[in-house]
Length: 524
Image 1 (cartoon, rainbow, N blue to C red):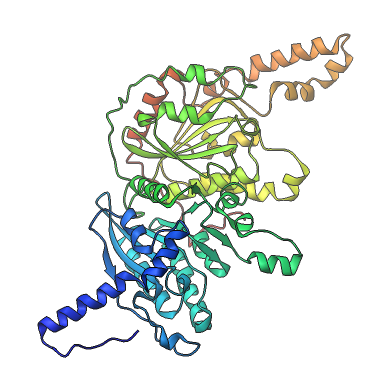
Image 2: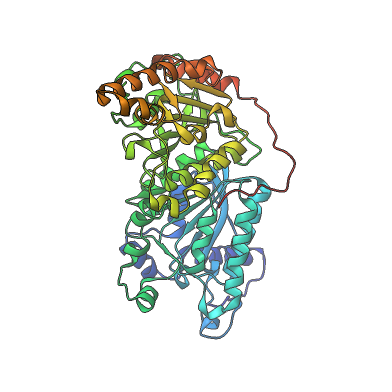
């Protein structure tokens, strides 16, 4: 593609040429390439940007950029944009920066000019203190440009890391993402994927087969469902691009623009003092009966609306964004409906990352506790439950945002401590009247403490039942922790919403600082 300078070099001619060139940049390589993209059920880069941003707000950066590489046929193909559309716009009236790979041009592969455009928009986002959204649909590094393309990825990774905890970074996977390219999404805060059309992997199916002999499809190796439920790489998964991008907009509406801002407040009219009668039906008093903790969150938050993160991975812990009296909060909750709500390696890592994000971006944390302990097992111990479980503990201890914990039913052993107990810095530790806070369950405790008495009894079963009840009466009654100052208040479940709303309002201006240091050294 060459630029033809018009014979008329006056203002009118130059303006006409500018309009022609920009039209070329907007059209893409040819109509057939657009048809092929649509035939795959995929939108073009500009169609995606239109769905993401408020109408008419997109300002493009470097639409006329072209690569300067020669050889291997590139000198005969120099399309405008070089395969990536970059710029900024508005989401709900707030500035957001975006770059979108254009698969129609070089398969969205990254070359030197392509990378420099991304570097520029990332630098602009960081300087402006505004979120960055990447719409990924690319075939990796541009082979024809060799090491220059690889260096371009290094610049992206470095900027992802520098922006971490400063501005929200969201990766939306709308096509393939292979090799080193997959590390940029992994460095960002949230990853969205679309079923059937997006895949992520370090080595593709052909390499896997050549090295290990295993045969697997692209979706089976790194599709949306795999990464949302098995690997935990993807936080959100959708059936189509439209619903995916709609939820990206919704997530952005819950997040501050940067780490110096507070999340946007949006009052819904849901009364602060609304009673939560249904909680008495949702949560059984019997600690051995399961229930869905998401229904508890739904009952408590504004208009019953919340956005769950990693909904299909480590399902024994629920992490979600919601609003209380218009203020954005992050919920971390044990899920009795999955593995009795026990903590394990995956749940600990899931919770730790969520807590760290909320702390980085000034989002208060509410922890709903109903945990029987850590998952026992050889695999858990050998796979590092000690160091990996400590990630959640480290994240809570390190967090300076407002922190409120509420024990719904049971809270046993080390898991009770880890789930933001008063002893590790929760600002308010609350409990419902049916709470049981102890080192372990009454049955296990009685078997340890009274094993000799039980063994010597004429009727061991009756003696065991007697000792279990004694342990419950003396050490596990609902007010034992409150009497010792480990719980600030025992609250009526029907007043849960109003109590939490008032607590969040009281803690809004909380100020806390960590000791001066370069950075901590969290467990890995």
